[in-house]
Length: 376
Image (cartoon, rainbow, N blue to C red; front, side, top):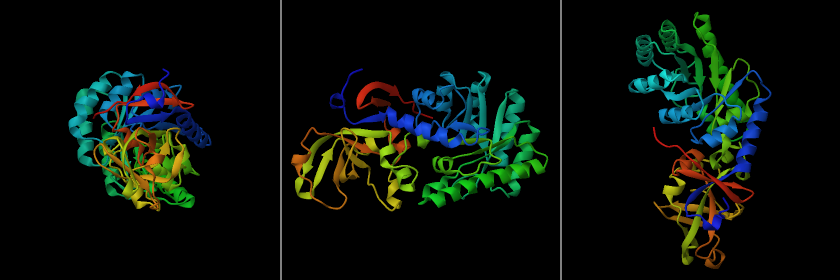
């Protein structure tokens, strides 16, 4: 494929293969300190088998966020799959179909009702499905706290069904860190909470061979993984402006961008109008709560080099409005109609979800297109 960026229909999603590989190598190097810890990359951002194979050249375990992803990756040779969203009971027949095809499935839950339903289902179907209890270590989302009475009650139900496999937590509050010491602290909070939950299960005579932790910030900044058996992360593959704002990476590490075309100007307002609105960029404003608000994305030239203080200040469905964040004027002569620009996204997951495929670049040249899988 010898297409140039000037020949592509816009807007489209660009993937810089070198940056992707660099981000993958960084995570491998970070986790090499703990060879006993299994790495289970999260495919919720990538949703693409080519990316998965670059993340796991020799194959290996993955985590997904939808059953559609589980089915897709199983069909492409990944059979050790953790479904990383709290189990909805009505999804059990679909999970059973995968298990019947010899998929090694693990599910998560955080309540006795779901645990009882899963236990009954496994007994009746005679299928092998493993379960992890979701632990809340930072008040971010779902899960039971490490000291909760419910932890043991859930564990007893799952143990009776022979499917208790351990605990899992996600330090989502790490996204609110603003310094390296804070990142270290969140990583330790995550680790210690998950390990404590597993210890309580074991003290009660229950099984907890797996202690699973992970988020991109904590995985990259963990200083101690004692007691942990596996680490999960997903956004690290591409990085994004939210991660840059957290201090996990720099904008130069972002592997994704959206290619767009200048379609007009509002010269008196200092605006450049493009064909990449929120349908291409997403409505995610994750940097709005950070010290530096990046609007709907940072503006780069066609080669991926940032242009001063230009950001996408607003987005309609199919229109993006670019301006200087400091209010400096922009001459239409600097960005004639037809100019190609690239926008670095706030949230790689949200922006990626707007597109059906990646246009893959190597040394600035289009070398391939990789399909992205979508749906639940």
